[in-house]
Image (cartoon, rainbow, N blue to C red):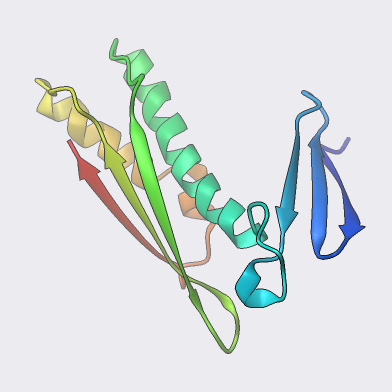
Length: 134
């Protein structure tokens, strides 16, 4: 049974529907690759998936340890390479403005982020640079 159904709607735009929830997302080709850049590009979605997966896995671990990570924020920079055109590097900057008294938990959270399923699924040729500002 499929998880996602997608279609090409023309003008370098796709629509994907998450079947369990009915949520949809649109992707557009980026301006630097013949598109309008009016939505996430497919490679933007890869980069966003990495950050979201890292935060989700840290959230699961934090919940298990009795810590609430509500308010955790992150920024992502996606760096492309040419010939062939592909993602060269994804930089993820995590920000947390509350103190961590438990340094052991902090190390566990960092390790969990770096070993999330998306991080482990990406081609090793994609450099993953992650900074934790907490």
